[in-house]
Image 1 (cartoon, rainbow, N blue to C red):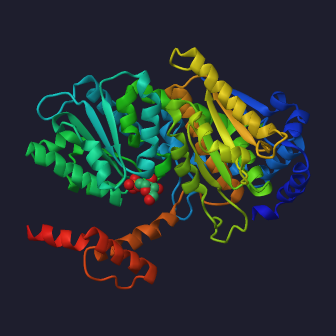
Image 2 (image 1 turned 180 degrees about the vertical axis):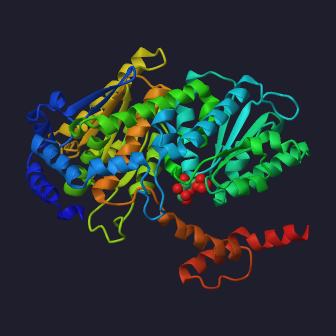
Length: 535
Ligand code: F6P
């Protein structure tokens, strides 16, 4: 157990000392930025991790690094890249790093299949972009509808939104995840089936939302085209369940595999990223992979005390396990990264929101805190009030892009100044004459700065967070690659679905039965179903 390790106990002692100092004083005493920021050059780009607003003095950092050593970090990292079965509850490796490694550096067992699939889907994307691949009436595609949820949605949506404006193509992207009928209505409204390409992304090809949305999208297409054959030119699937996708009606050429050794939330580098390739082209997609691979190389080779993902993970563990912080805000100060908080919520909370160790025993310590956030500077006029004057402790990552793509220099300067002003206020606070105006400060934050937002730098950033997640899983001795907790609610929804449509609520607890009965009465579900079946 991590808490039995000598380094853990040492960190408990250090935490008791640390909280006696003000964060601002501690930061100044430790040499601030000079000693606590880490800048790496990846390709032609620079990525800065600034920990100078964290409660990290040298003894603490040394003890955290010792904790990583005592947890066997280097060995676990080797096992990750080699494809060992680190997802022990599902008996699988987690080989997302192989998807972005150059051919010769991929584990041999996946080398060919990764290459073949990558070439197929990026060529497919370029053919759609160039207009070589067209719809059934010969018209070029104008709209891409991506249907998927969770890891089969958040990554592609984030990257397309972040980078699309750099590639001014004529394709428009529509992401559909939610099972809410309102979502599909809005998604398909105004689309012309002749020029729409639908991508179904589901590793399992059994996920309720994607199945229901996929079936409705197929009906929408067939109702408007009355052409069953045309379906094969307009529907594409990315899945590990090839047979189910065939049965849906996807033709062989339009089937792109993913594999059980790629976790959903780590899958944007695979064919799950097809919309990304459609948005930024094969070359852009390769840059994204290269950026992620550069981070993989850094993660594997950089000394432990300069290792960005590990340092990020250690700072988190220090805050959550020793300083009592229970929530973590993601604050991208860049409109292009507005979706990053949502993406990281899944990556971090689905991966490390666990309460048993790898061997199934209870952890007995806290694991992943709540991740939330929103783009700056909007949040300053909303939830930052609580951050500055509320009673809850938190930590935050500020994510900044130094050079904007636009030419509004004044905007950019204010954006950056606002981010720095916020993290400064969170660190130093202010005591005023009126208690109503006091700002407590003493909240630890991390600042990340990319020199530019490109496919390469975005790839590096996302890979860094992936490895942070892995490192924290190692430090807590939990499996970051399964997600059994999501299953129960899905199973319980099945009888409720039936019961909303019939006369019974058998076997339900009284609270749930009450709601089933109330909804039936309010929505007239029964009456509508009877009416439709009579038609
Ligand atoms: O329900 C959780 C989950 O399994 C995620 O882990 C996954 O990313 C998402 O559902 C979608 O799964 P699939 O790609 O199989 O449709």
